[in-house]
Length: 350
Length: 123
Image (cartoon, rainbow over all chains, first blue to last red; front, side, top):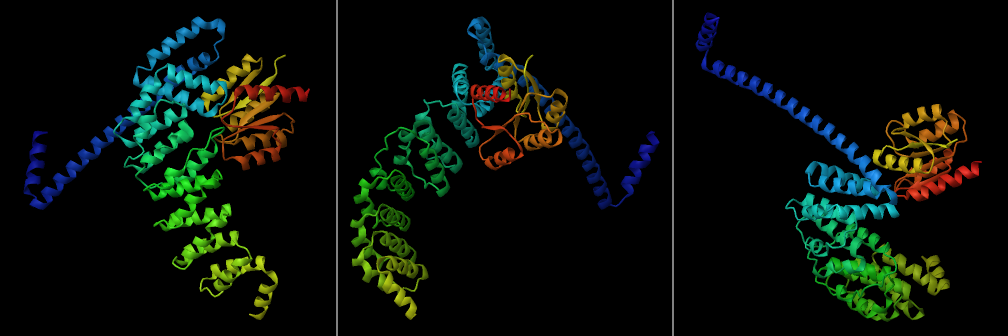
């Protein structure tokens, strides 16, 4: 055997240097592949073991939880025992995760008294504290998980914690925090608009409005301050709320916003003026029409068409010469309503 | 004799909770965690009412309805569970012969009421 190795070494040493290096590299790679293979197997086994253990825990707590939900008043002793057991279990990380997941999943599928029962149980077991811990984690997606948990379980005492995340650098986290503010505190939660420094995306505005629309029996807050926010997206969003809640009494503010430096704010305000048919806006709309870019002009003429009367016929007639097809079309349509006979003649002439 | 309820639902916790509630109400409950298992149980146990989720592994709730109504030609009432955004599926379920539907999240109390009402009508 010794001779065999000696021969191998002498053969190896007799090889050119490059071939020697290649052999070393091949040998190291074989070792690396073998160790990775063993490592992967170990990880897989550990993972499988973890899944089996978790399944066992799920089965265990599933039964305890369901029995707990349906305990009657005569079974108070058993109920107290289960409460004790669950309270001890949540102190252990893996048990807690299973119990938390079970409560959250079940809560997702249920409404009515059982959902309220699960919310109370979540609180009683102290799981809220762990959700709050997640909210304070330095990792953004764990923060989101925490926020979602408190929102789902309707934990109300997280106002300050959520408000602090409104201006977080991560957009997803910001969005989640904003939605939570509205979901948990309804109109009161909209106060985050006071301090919001980042723009609210169009999609986020849709989500927020969807949440706001589900608010029942609440007085609409005063939107004035947000119409003068330094954040243009806050103004646009507030304008959408003005429209949603028919806040027609805010017409003075809407008229002022027609001259806002932001094109988007101007357009949104113009659109709402037309929607509310605020005739006092006619003069200012006509004044800014000339100075505006074609796209804004289209918004203005659309709004004016909602407010028009016979006195506006010269204005619309003038727009028939516009180089923009859409503007011309709105002008024709408006004139058709104002003096149908004349427009028909004009069109026939053309 | 106890009335038999077949519950086809892939969420194990929810099905256990419903099973517990149904048994408390005096029903004999059979549980299936997927569409295939549900079809086998329907054939063997001939339940008085079927509760099925729409989205399930192997075969869906729609296939379960079709199996009961078209293959077995039984008029067993079927209540379908659907999640938000599955309105089209619910329409398909009704076209296939479902009796009622409940949108998740739902209240187990309401489900029990509906089961009782449907079984009363059947009698």
